Image (cartoon, each protein chain N blue to C red):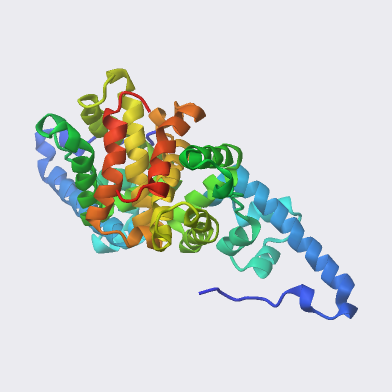
Length: 202
Length: 202
């Protein structure tokens, strides 16, 4: 599933260091160009050709380093939600605090919208989103939901509301969703997230 | 925006009827093949070439009738939510009833998943989803929310939860979402939809 993986240049002997440094610089230039293109154009419209041009490199080199567009996207885009520790938040404020946090992430970070677009059509991007959920949201939910065994389900319920808002507001651009002020979204969706996190049962 | 529109064959004089009938039959064959392909393969993977082959027709004819893949999708796929009339449902059951209705639509109808995938990357498909919301969901919400002026916002809030569930369960396939039984989804999400439809304020 993971495609053709190359051994990292960093693991080569010290004698190759100048070449390795050149290689690192090339890789870094491609990744920087990819991040800008994916953020500006979205996943679908950002082409390998345009990214290569931005990085002043031949498109075949991009393929050599990253295999394909999905591989480049996965390497270029690190999703760091930086979710707050629930232990530091009054329990009755969990839903609103998390909702406000997610909303400011989405408002500021077009990469999240690009990942959502990619996840809708590409299995590798969908797997990355599963990874973000598993590694970053489930641990937070573990500290808030009544039964730890339910953490994956509670996290998925929260994700359904947070991603649904992102989908309707930033991707599908439903006028009724675009019209909402951020604090109105927190007022409406915060209690929903609160319930998915903390309610004993539905 | 709407591309090159052809005058409908139906509007030609009666003398041309045999040709018009052939044309109608071709059009119908393409649409039938397209519906099956979009449902089976999803929007992205369904190709004009494969649809033309299924319809036993040249791909150039598909383009001549429908312009491009988006145009074909829009013509092939009619989204009929058949939402229940809220006047026939006890007020406290609105959220659960609508949620159960949406869920059975999604469980049975792969076209909805295809439209969601398409809407994430294609502006024409996103506009179609806006149309479904405006023409089919907003009228239902008008009969349930306290202030008719808020109907577009209330409908968008409901859509954020319903489409978010569809996204996480059918497209991204988050294990915690896939694991839920339909009735568990109704238990968890029904009260959310109820609140978006009927609450005086957040």
